[in-house]
Amino acid sequence: MRETSDLGLELKFTRLEVDLSVTDGALIEGYASCFGVRDRGNDIVERGAYAASLKLLAEAGRSVKMLWQHDPAEPIGVWDEVREDEKGLFVKGRLLPEVARAREAAALIAAGAIDGLSIGYRTVRATKDEAGRRRLAELELWEVSLVTFPMLPEARVGAKGESPGDGLMRDLAAVIEDARRDFARGAERG
Image (cartoon, rainbow, N blue to C red; front, top):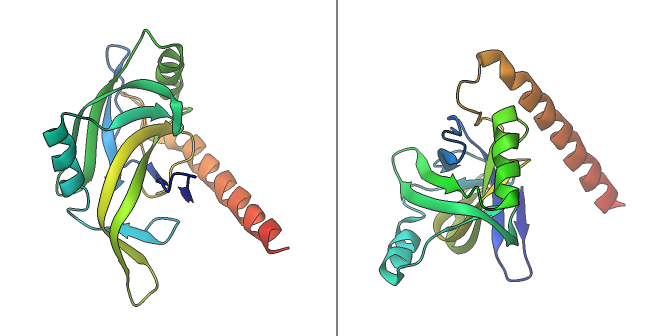
């Protein structure tokens, strides 16, 4: 899902292909964005889209924020590593046990109730391809949130040690979310 806030910040919900590992009660990692994959918003993030933003953040001594459900009033941890690789935008960080919502997030991740990441960004450069898809070439990354409903249904995230059959509930949640979106689109049309 792509949303735009009052500040012009775009949000892109992503479900990861790799495990969102929770170790020592607080460490998490995974892919917040995958290159070359069309999402439900008909966008495709191009390889290198985050490079300039990550460089500027590093030069300024700032970091990408870790939020709960894109709420700027709810930081829940810190991203110790945010980098592009051949697959996408890899993130690794710590949920802060001193923060109540972070303790809740760790429990929800461990139970498999939360398994997605979402990026908050501003589009710097994008084009439309012949199929009408938006090709995101450069993004100003602001934050990566832990979220309930991610954007890419092909990708997944789970608690460390998850068994293969545990994805059934996530698949069911994706079907329910698709139905909810279809209903909302129908209601918007009249």
